[in-house]
Amino acid sequence: MSQTPKKPDKLPGFFVEFSKKYPEVARAYNQLGDATSNAGPLDEHSIRLIKLGIALGARSEGAVHSHARRALAAGASPEELEHVALLAITTLGFPQAMAGLSWITDVTRREPHGPDPDQPADSSD
Image (cartoon, rainbow, N blue to C red; front, side):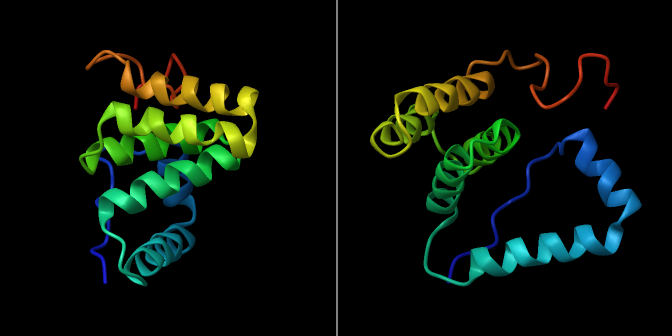
């Protein structure tokens, strides 16, 4: 069984507000994520790359940003994250894979103290 993957240090502002307004739902969602991560033999690194691929397939920019950050926190390299997008070319098509690659590089090429791509420019979170 794998270990529960680590949560990133900073959550998107919208999710923080959602969690405050609906704490029981947020807690149940987090518990489900933990349970699915622990349900099989995959290690955290593998789980994070797979979740990134799922986010690419779902065409969700916010989820790609989130899972790219989580994969980096789990020790994945920027090159590994970009490889996930390249693997998507033959399944999702070139345009979607390139969109996903751009979302990944939003995270991997961001300056250390640069803006969070999931936060509005005027956010104080």
